[in-house]
Image (cartoon, rainbow, N blue to C red; front, side):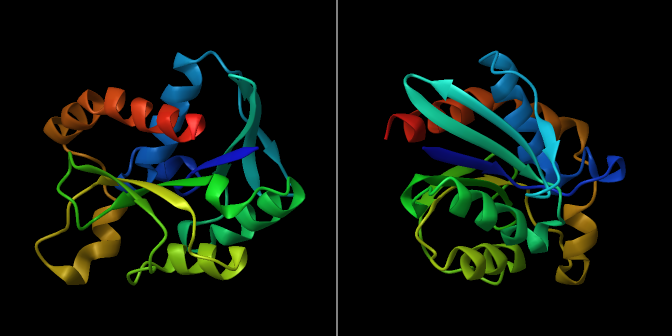
Length: 177
């Protein structure tokens, strides 16, 4: 059993922000593979979709907590389905990457990210896979919160859309092990 979690913030006002790039990418993946539709599950405070891909049961999750409380949705879901941490993939934005850069990482520290701290604390381990996509950093570090909650510029949107194939390939590779 695999668990793929796209991080973002709930509510329409955050829909097109940098923090929500993974809600968008995950929706594209689900649609491209014709896997169905997410539905809200009150027990997990998340939109959930369970699908079978190449003989693997996969749970897709979009927590409806705010980013910094992502562990509140992910850990109970992982525990219920007895998903080992090595079979969890967290998809998140990364301000330390330029807008188009994508990277894969397994394990590691939270590097100051409160939402990673939440996940690590609730899962009890940092040993899970991560795909990070760059959203760049504001010129003034005092405006990081405003930056990640801002919309992409048109030229940035285009760059990110061009990266979807790479994202899809990385998710497929994770699913294959």
